[in-house]
Amino acid sequence: MQGRGLNIILALYVALIFTFIFAPILFSLVFSFNSQRFPTIPLGEFSTEWYVKIFNDPDVWQAVRNSLIVSSSTAVLGTALGFCTAYSDFRYNFRFKGPYLALILLPPTIPLIIMALAMLAWLSRIGLSGQLWSIILAHSVLTAPFAMAIIRLRLHQMDPDLEAAAWNLGGNEWQAMRHVILPFCAPAIVSALCLTAAVSFDEFAVAWFVSGLNKTVPIVILEIVQGNIDPQVNAIGTFVFLTSMTLVILAQAIFISRQIKSHS
Amino acid sequence: MTNPLVTFRNVEKRFGDFVAVRDMTLDIHEGEFLAIMGSSGCGKTTTLRMLAGLESPTAGEIRIGGRLMNDVRPHERDTPLVWQSLALFPFLSARENVEFGLKMRGVAAAERKHRALDWLDRMQIAEFAERNVATLSGGQKQRVALARSLVMEPQMLLLDEPLSALDANLVIRMQGVLTRLQKELGITFVYVTHSQSEAFAMADRVVIMSQGDIAQTGAPRDIYRAPANRFVAEFVGRNNILTGTVTTTNTGGTEIATPQGNFTAQTPTPPPQTGQQVSFTVSADLVSLSGDAPGTVNQARATLISEEFIGSVVTLFLEGPEGQEYKVQMQERALTGFDLTPGTDFWLSWEPGNANILEAG
Image (cartoon, each protein chain N blue to C red):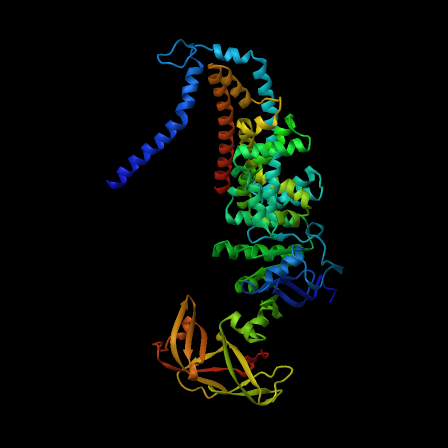
């Protein structure tokens, strides 16, 4: 009976967590279709007015375009960087490997605002600030650790003889990489691409500091909020949420399905 | 005899302070089935990996077909290996696994497929060609791994404990498959194993390794009947080992005084010195058991401790004076009429020709 009581408490706890995470999002989704200007109950009529409004706003379109360029470029660069570090960890043993790995995993532990200021100082010093490229560079550094963690996990599941088997059958190191390591890591690489894209798509602080006049979606959201209370924010927020969620769920689904398959 | 296919000359492999293989000199001949046997950490796998180029020796020379191979990269060699883990590529079908080496060598797709299917057919697993290897059974995977190596048409096949993951019945069947393949293809097999039964059942010649050294090289029967030293005698098992002092020695035999009595053994070359301390062995299955003293040259008194019954063969464990252990292996039906209560005293005896003096050390 005690176990059952505990289970109920745990279930409540989980329910509370999900409520606090998803209620605001649900709230914003509901009000994005509400005709009234202010988020009050009772609701007004169902309306797509706010979607039409952002749809016709060239600023929003430009921001979406920027965000797509930044997040897709970041995904490729961050994942490539993450793959290289994960592979170097898998394949080689060297002195200071511990500090090397710690250094790579460091960026997500630094407060974003500090990271953003440091990035701005550094990029403006070398003349790279204020461009889309600046955001891509900064985001690649920021997201590489996530990519590395996922790919490293996958490499740890690999029979270390597989690569040697490829050499043994006449493949040189590049052929072994292309025909054995990359195919084996493929599910992890796709997951890493999705996850890094999602992180970059959502990221505000660093983008805001180094972007100059090139606004990404989160920056435009802030500007809308600063201007006036407007349910456009709910509409655009719903759009951003759906994009990130899709990417993250995709990343999880691909990784987990392969995991199950390779263990059967 | 023709030139050996592989020569090891004073080969050494160190990992830091650890010496995995010490001063190894060994010839491997064309078309022979050579087994390298020893317990884990004896250097057998390191030896195999050096042949495949996955490790390079820290001293000495390895030649294959006369060519110095010390620093030749793995992919530039023709030494396919059947891995203990099998190391099949899990994201490929059986056929694609077999094609892998040919693809690396730049063989055209149509020919690749043809040759891979040929080998899968030969290994009697053609019906699983398009299946993912993860869905195959242990024995089927084994056959894919063999096909993947043999499709390369190598001069020499390396095998690293390939049967260790299989159950006992399958091991016997795969032993048959391997020996038949080796005879049909006429290529050299170098087979690393810790299992004496695998090595003795398949190999033409066995190398026994211990702590990086070769303890003995020879045909399975010779190693079994005449172990060269104490390590081999104990490793091969089912040997009685007695130690004593040489009293006389001539070509007819060497007499040795032990706490168990005086015994005569075959005189080895070079013969031992009078007064030297030596050990000799007698295989457990060459010892006779009797209730009364047989009155022959080599006889010893011992007390039965226990018996081990495995079907038609029984091993008796006995103890002589000063804690000397004896093992006697007999057909079960030859034991009727003996009282096998522990504590019963027996006489053991053996022919002088079956007692072999071990090298010192």
